[in-house]
Image (cartoon, rainbow, N blue to C red; front, side, top):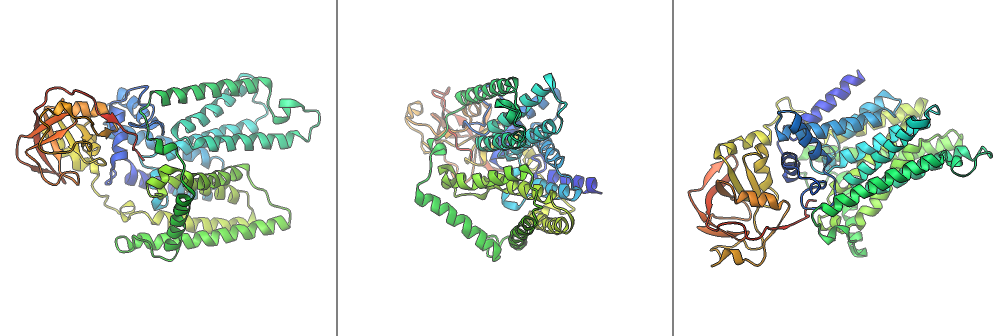
Length: 530
């Protein structure tokens, strides 16, 4: 029964959020698809235009394209959900209660609506946490199996370290998680070892000299790889690594608290457009308050009877959530992007894991009470998702809507910054896309287009070059372009209108020819992926 429920939850998640079925495919999803088709290493160890967020999903997707005949969008969908499934199985294997495993499936595969990027092909939150889960499973197996010695012991230690470094490559924040992991694991072993006065030095920490050398060498390789990947990646805006002023931190905290207050009082800004979402977000918030009060009561009661036992993994994820809630408001990048709640996805799943590990250690009436509350919270959380998640008739996938573009032949498209790449996801082998040149987006063209002093920043400069090598270039009418001019300056090229505008799917496009021969200078590259 539990396996059936988890399978159903997994299927609902795939149907709603897998890139090849998602009706709301966005630019970040598109980057995965295009990178999987045209992967260039070492420059693509990180996503186009930045030196952060490791591109593991496109790398796996690229490998699948080499050995199968599936399309790029299916390849990255499979890669994403493969990693999500591995992560879920890793964490679920640490829970004794089958009911708590179902609750984890709801929180993991059908997350609260602001944190759906945990499962989508956009930010690598899911894969990042999956490798933390792998490291924890390996550490638990290692710790609970004293018979693991010799080569097998060193293999376990190396795999744990490698898993942590893969997670760090996927997200710089995982460095915090890895340090907490190391501190808690070593601290736990030390607490047991100090009872034996005969143990000295590293042995008191459960380590041998060989173990220490293994960790040091594997860590050195991990650090070297990440340094190599960053060295070969595109430059990223300095704003990403800068900190907020005190007033900006206050502004972020105030915004988060205001969001919580509006949600709990059912006054969320989605009230008019999505009342159902507001209802379940409010119910979820109230249930979370009740859950926190219940946890406090249970802890007080168990401490009073000196029967409180808490898993070290509960402490790990609680500290991880606290660390993220402290550090993220300090980030200038979070402030610039309006303190979007998606940046707190790691906080969300860390808190869920902390509570689940806590509940798994309870017994009797306390266990039943906690399980009931967690079921209600998880259901309210998952029901906050759009109605299409549970509808019998799924909406048409975005990738299906884009099929008409294939009839245009080998075409290049210049469109809005956040939507241009989406058009090419249907067939990256045939179509090329780039955002418009925001530096010199003017009409008519300059007398000598090649003397344009500055060009716009784009994520993928080789993509821009291929657009101008296409048989036909189309401009896409969006916010950046109200009307189709007779000619327009773009990336040191002069484009001249070559036909009437037409409607293709939901887009209005017009053909242009390149009056300028060659691309004098490649466009600058930007690290603006959020």
